[in-house]
Structures are given as structure tokens and as C-alpha cells.
Image 1 (cartoon, rainbow, N blue to C red):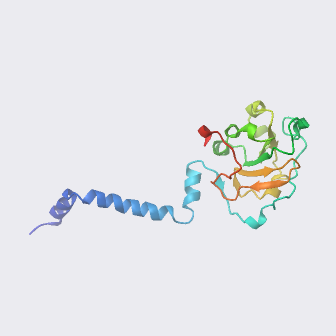
Image 2: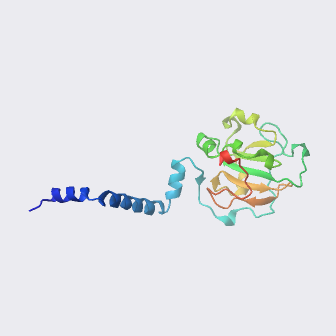
Image 3: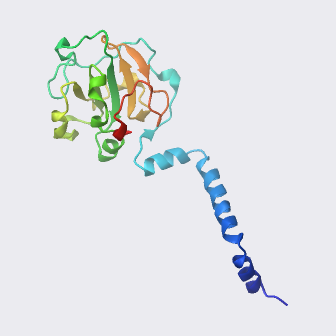
Amino acid sequence: MVNSGTKVRRLEQSRWFWPAIGLAWLIILHLTLRSPGAQQFLAALLGAPRVGSHNPANDPPLGAVIYLPVRDLYGKRLDLGREKKRGTIPSLLVYAGTCSECSLRAFNPMSIEADSYYRTIVLYDSGAADIPGYFRRLPHNFLIISDPSGKYSQMLNPAWSPRFYLLDSDNCLQGIQSQALVNPPFLYMPEEAQ
């Protein structure tokens, strides 16, 4: 009579035992990752952008004017003195959420190709005291807006952060990021930042 311990040892010695165990774990992992909420959990775990509930019907329509302050946090005018041809180069507006360590990992303003846009406007929900001082040294066409009251961000329907918007020279919306974790086609980033 063969006891159960002997059967297990024979099974473990089989050349198919460990590959079968590995395949079973892969199937379990695959099914788990397809479950609702798994992508949000992994995004939070890895420091990726936070994804909230998103209703596209609440997004501002293309062509809508996005109202912004005249000056940024450091006193720079948002029209940048019109030294570039305003009508031909679009502006990038980034809703970046709070200026916490997590959101700074999810979005670094230096990851944007500054020369691809007339302006790059980064909108934070944080107060001025919470925004790092080194942002003052960003290129001249980077503008930082502190919006702790949500006065400017509420019209953007920022269901996740960072969320990207493309504006024309009159601050009319020309493009909007439609999915979290997927960069929109109008976003230009250097190869090493992607």
C-alpha cells in the first residue's frame, strides 16, 4: 500500500508538476487583474495617477472657454507677453491634483516638452505654501496655478490626475484626455520621460 506522502513525492518529481503550478498561478493572477477595481488598486500601489469615477457627459465641450487667472503663482502673465505667434501654437493645461509627494511622482512638470506648446499651465489644488519653490525655476512658458478653492478646476471635470487639456490662443478647449493612464495624442514628452 502506498501512503499519500509517497504519492505527493512522486507527483513533485514529475517534470510537469512545477510548470502546472506556475500555470495555475498565472491563470489566477490574470483573472484577479481583470476584476473590477484591480487597475485602480495597482495604480495606487505603484504611485500612478489616481482614477476616480468619470462621466464624460460632465467634461467641458470642445470649443468651451476655460477661464484662468491673469497671472500665475509667481506673477507671470498667462499671455506671456505674446512673444510667440499665439494663433499657431496651442497651450497645454494640466490638472495635477494636489501637490503632494504622490502626485509629484505621478506628474513631473519637467516631463513635458516645453517648446511644443505656447504655454504649459499646471493647475494644482494645493495652496501656494504647498507648492515646491523649485517650480519657480521652470522654463518661462511653464505657469503654475494654485487653486485650493477649486474655482478653476471645477469646470474641467478632473476625474483623475494628472489630466491633460489642449487650449488654443483664446483658452478655448481643443482637446481633452479621454482615458486615465493613456496619454492623449496631443501630449509631447521626451523619450526618456515616457
